[in-house]
Image (tube, rainbow, N blue to C red; front, side, top):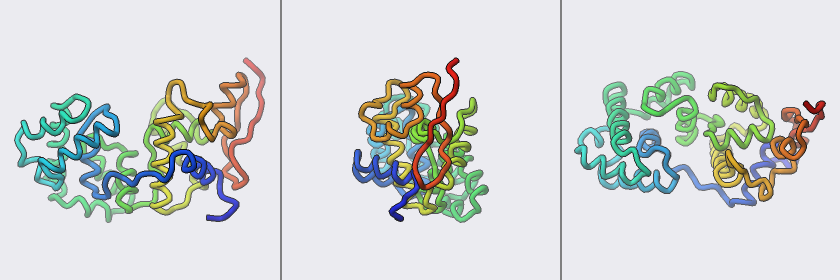
Length: 253
């Protein structure tokens, strides 16, 4: 990495200093990543991991395993999550049905499609939207795309990247576009970015009552500055290697 790193790389370095090296993805298998999304709902990482581990051990995570399992076996698995056991069991069955009926159990062939076609195919699975499809493509090492989930997206927005929209996917695309010239187009770098930004959003840059006093990014954070100085607006990061967002003042309302 060049010594004069882009602003986002400096952000990641600060987060890595705070949290340590990020954990690798739970899996690099495309179908397992799909099942990971369906095995629990509104669950913590620990609860979801517990349910997913039970799925691996008791049922299996290859296409066809879930269809062969009994209803009670699936419920025993999904009860390991926070709740919604019946709904999650049904989502697992639907995911397996899509894998078998639409793709003949060969999910890996989807990864060889062009990006837009691969995302469209992955979105046929329950609970997989465009961000989720991009995460699967990233975690499998297929496409070097900055996949963001809600926590990481919030962190980048508060730092001043992109614009907020009423529709989530519009905000998502705006942030991706604004940060495009800050990323390294390599899956390893992008997975590191995904994991660090996600953890920071979970533990420090929370939706409500963020721990700004413990945040290593507060010195260049648009959200922190505007919270401390009402009536002040920050310009969106220019993307230049020199650093983060620059401040500009506007008249108080």
